[in-house]
Length: 79
Image (tube, rainbow, N blue to C red):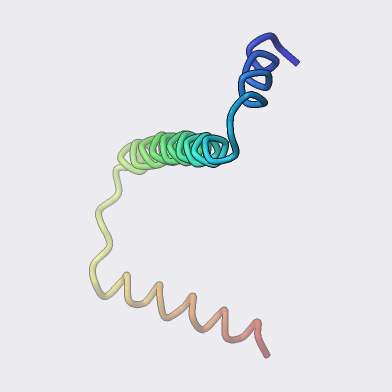
């Protein structure tokens, strides 16, 4: 365990239960923010890769056909 973790544990042990709940909420907030940041980076990279493909966007009809095909495939797997 590194020095920062040890120091944090010592400080946490001195807090009342109510404050520990606040710390837990804050840690969960930080973890969620990290997760959103990572997801945003992945999305940005994916969009960049799509741009590099230089393909034309799908029409509404093509999107509908893709959706119907995926639904048909999923239904076939259930049987």
